[in-house]
Length: 181
Image (cartoon, rainbow, N blue to C red):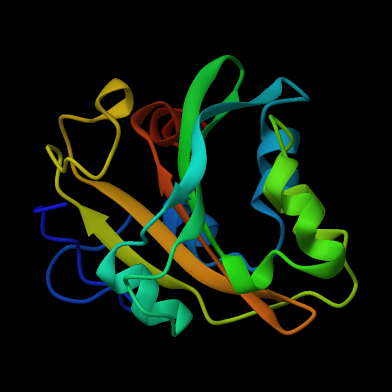
């Protein structure tokens, strides 16, 4: 894509900072799926926007330590809470990760990846990075774009010492839900 990716950092930089309630979600190292299920009182679902083989974005490939020319399984979903689009998630699963017992990750359908990751006792996670996405950023699907900047986070997960990258962007409806609490 010709669009400039945001800068990823391990803490807020510059004059723009997420709200305190959102920061608690951005930097939480537990299962986002579990937290969303709890916040939505069980009214949680996953909508798969796309899943297929593609080339990762440059910053994704760099984060994973793979060539940007290498194909990976790219999965894009929207996580809904209380029937509202709360989170847009993009996961990059390199071909070399999807071997052995991890082949099953190729067929998640509408099951949340996070639930599977956090149920694996051998899983470990890299530090979380955050970024602010401009309102009109074309990296965010049109159906969930915002009129205001959106905050996202990403980190690498390792299963059997094989990496995958998960990026989660908190959408307007989620931010409104947090503000109403």
